[in-house]
Image (cartoon, rainbow, N blue to C red):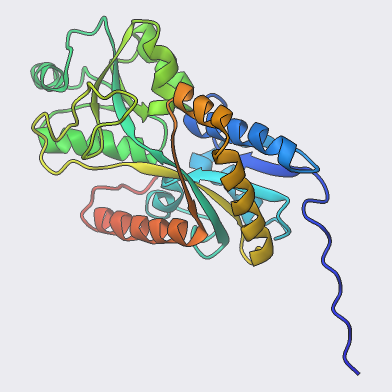
Length: 306
């Protein structure tokens, strides 16, 4: 006699933890909180955003890797989630196989921000100043991707720009505004609120095409740095073996939330470029990043943390 299948408990049966493995105030944190609020009326329980920063995102991400695959513990990570495999000496999980790709959430165009008090107004002037003053143009970064972009620009232009690391884009931009940091690579979401102060200018964007948030700012390619095209993404992950039914429900709910004009307006106001795509597209992006960073590491352009 066949044993009847046990009914699966309804999801969610309690609040959903959305762990952000970065500090508050950065682009990923802002994105997660906006999505959490948009999902609130669509779910019987809230999405609770929890910041667990540390170790280049590993501290919070490991919590999700070890969580039960029941859909109640998720994380939103940036593309350096993959890069950490080549940057960190020890990674307590596999960044691909220990997670279930749920959805791509946004494109993460990086911009080079500078305070208006700095003695340069565009990328060419910054490069000329850095060349004449080796080591004086510290370049802020918040994770391995923005650090890599800054050092790649230095390699391509033959300048020396020490990498100055921050815990979040918000902290980096505060120092740019105050004049403590000459320039910094950060997301459009982190830069947008500070453009209204009139004390910040964007010198370049990291991608091959201009960002709609700063359409007047030329790309690094347009300013003479050939084939410079580096960007990131934010993806929603769950633990490995997350049931397909929950992944499907999450994608349906995200589709509803992203169609809401209120959330669209919030994204625009915060400088977030929404790019909602299902799990297979996120997996493809993760695998692409894995190949990209493996090649960069083999060429010696990514250094292992000591």
